[in-house]
Image 1: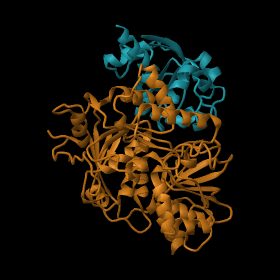
Image 2 (image 1 turned 180 degrees about the vertical axis):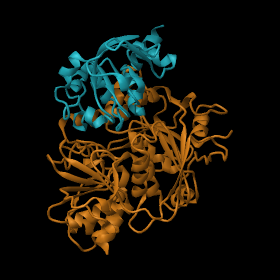
Image 3 (image 1 turned 90 degrees about the horizontal axis):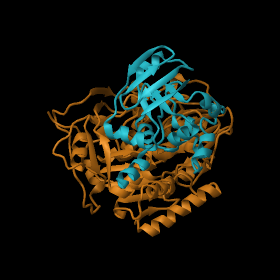
Image 4 (image 1 turned 120 degrees about the vertical axis):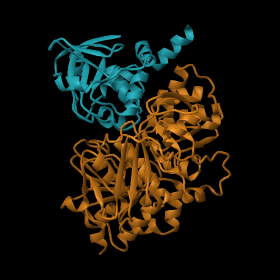
Length: 419
Length: 164
């Protein structure tokens, strides 16, 4: 019997000749990622008896959740992280303003195919887009990696998704993600590895693949992974990577379940309050007036997301009852979106530009929502209270739906608005 | 490791944003974090837990963010154990690491009611309901995971093992 990608990558990292789903392994971690919660990880590291981190080069810290700091408390915590970086000679540190950790890790090509990467952020699943095994943990687990360089895993079962067909205009990777989650549920991939195949996946840009793998966290996935192809090789071509292991699953690998999905007829999707799996076609949600729209986040804050939003808005204005927040996922995205004129168009239309980072996605600052407000966000979570008041209602969609709705002031299908 | 307590019931998909909203994540004192547990959805949570300290909940408990504070605030609020039909994986790891017993047992969840008195043998993976005179077998842990829980969490476990 052959092996899935998760089985192969975890076996390699654990220096085992073969492991199957259900076994426990202790794997060497190629990169340990953390963000603003590094302050908590530092405490845990010391509580574990840590003095010097084992391998400073295998640690990345990117401050992204509160950019710049929103309270004295978070400013002090960020300051502690900066001191720790210096004390421990950690070379890979990116301060506030560089961007969301997941986008920065991708742009800097810090995660390469075949790596086993762990971060104290749930959306680490994103990095399966570059064919790595990447998963999220909490602060104690991450501190243990700083100290020992290893972590235990239960080797996951794998779900295989074969996604076929060509997407229609204004239908995106976010719609594929939402339709999958709507089908399998918010726990549909719990503890599972998700492998993606098919022509529709091959056609996705790397940015769109990041979006898809990011969203699989919301189905409970341990990791999501797309096998390496020419697109990915091209992306890493110029990088002088010492590490680049192209690994494929075996043809006779054992999958727990196989899903065959055709996206040719897929229409824009929307997740309704208060659960990511409460998914409907946008056309089924009528007359919902929006107070605030967010285009950004580790799911949909990339250049292609601002491109499609700018295209849809065109020379129109944002409806005067709507606040449109624009949060580029990184400094590079921001600069490119300026260069291409996307941001100029969106700001001229009435959009409000915020610094690169997680922004208002988790209700910390920069656009906290009021009681009973209706929000449309391109991020990944619509839990009650996520973005501010618990009585607010959060809808999730693609940037195309967000931009179309910004123009009309109500939840709208971009295909109707552009026509 | 034997846990005794009375049951406080919660529903399906209790997510980490509901357990501890993002705006409280800079709080470092665990007892102060505990006072913010379920701040938006159940402001009297701390009072409930004083009398009913075993949470029994449905599917996908702890889904969402990787915030360890979700497990910490429940532990320091006085929650002795959580019995659920299933747990989200990061919350599960965090709970074990902070020494909060999380027990997967959907058959028990279906039959237990609020206020019931339970005895949980974590090592043997058995839940006894004294109110119903019934017992259930849960999904079992590897021995080393029980040792982490018995030690009171991963940090105490490492410290104890170092002392040996």
